[in-house]
Amino acid sequence: MENIDNPHLASYIQAENSYSTKVLSQNRFLQRIVQREMKRRLQTRRQLPPLTTVAHGYEYFSTTSAYGMVYLRKPLGKGRDPPEVYCHTIGTTQEEDVLVFEEPDDSVFVDITSTKDMKFVTINSNSLSSSEVRVIDATLNVTQQNKPLLRLIKPRVPQLEYYVDHHDSTFYILTNAQKATNFKLVKAPDESVEHSEWEDVITMNPTEKIEDVDIFQNNIVIYGRRDGLPIILCHDLSTKLTHQVDLPGRFCVVSPGTNLEFNTDTFRFSVSSPFAHESTYEYDVEKRKLNPVRVASIQGFDKSKYTCTQIHVKSHDNQDIPVTLIHSKDYEKNSKNPVLMRSYGAYGVSTDPDFKIEHLPLLERGWVIALAHVRGGSELGRPWYEQGKLKHKMNSFRDFIAVAEHLVKTKVTSPDHLAAIGTSAGGLLVGSVLHMRPDLFRALVLRVPFVDPLSAMLNPDLPLTQVEYPEWGNPTKDKEAYECIQAYSPYENIKALSNATSLPAVFVTGGLKDQRVAYWQPLKFVAGLRHSLKESKDVLLKMDLDRGHFGGGSEQDARLSEAAEQVAFLISHVQK
Image 1 (cartoon, rainbow, N blue to C red):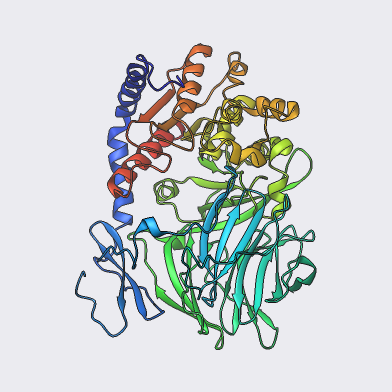
Image 2: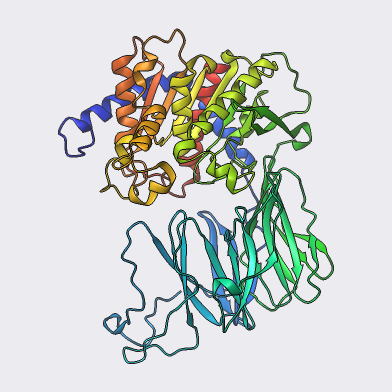
């Protein structure tokens, strides 16, 4: 199956797709209702108030069209009406380009940015666990005869990460150096950026972490978390005082805005929550005033009927696992509530209480959404991530199982009413739970799931294998890593299901053009289930022949149709 040129592959995929289409067609009426509900919720005004940003002589703005958001810019003082877009090679031909830097290491990603004050260009060479940043004077006229001098901020050190910006005559560096596992902000003068010269500016408590930093002429804005929930801090560069921004809600997701202007006391950020689309706010640091710029409501959804709460669940090692519950205000603990668990638990990616349109039809039908903040994410900082990777990866699965058991024990739900969904590495999480505790769930959805991690990590020629050794380990050289991956790999443990007395219904998706999780991972997994299980009629595979890891592009109807299909699958098995 790993050979895409195998003459039998196309017919096998067609047979799986045909079977899934036949089974799912039994829920076609429900799927149409759910899709209509979601589409109605997403209806917005034909044109939303535009977002504008003024910087460097241009006004950057966005508007809406029948195809989605459109992003534009215009010179200050000119009108917006001309559509006037050009592609231009500045001055010289590509043959005259100057090679400035080359990164020989395939496990490293390279990108370039400019510092906020526009004085330097930064060349950022990052892996999953280390950094190396070089800076170039942005005013230099670069030619073959006048190549720029690259200034290395700090040579690469394993497990040390840092990111560089600049203000006046000072470099500001966000780093995890000196045991700052949740990161800190330091500074160093232009003339001496050696590590010994780094001076602390902002440090965090053990339950806090810094996720992003934005530097302005008078202030530094810190985006972070405290006890897993988002915070924004404003640090005055003159007084050295720091204050916290009052956010519009407690359970939400905060994202930095595109704040291009350096000399300003206002900045923008966006907020989304389980009951609200992404909205844009502007904060005046001097006045300490938060102003809504663009708030998009959900049509026909009464958010006053619902709430978010947080509980903590003891895992196998007595560690408290945070769980965010999204539910109706009048739900009762009667063991009959349908519950959808979801998590990710890898790469330090947090499972946030953001807006997901597919949750609304479930909430309105009495479901509880349970976001399990398992180890492997970074909700509680870098240590939370470190405790769910490499040789500690099993913690992610045990945390998820502990949450499921707690929801049953406390009568929030029962195994007959419990479902779970996971995407990519989250699909690995849900797929592993399938062979570890198949009795706990009634239905599972695995979207483009990473279900054969051992085969992937044993093949260094795959696009991302070497890059991801710091996350999963290198089983080609490390016996412990091999055995650890083998122990939790869904594909390697299919045989454990052969004697299971009860199994959940399973819906698996994949993309033939997926460059992150190869098509053969979900394909082999489902084939293995069919080979090992006595009864596999409730196992479905839908392989999209034209799509990659992130779906089929920007078509809203296609995305809603896919989501509605999965929601209808869950409802049909859990709420018969």
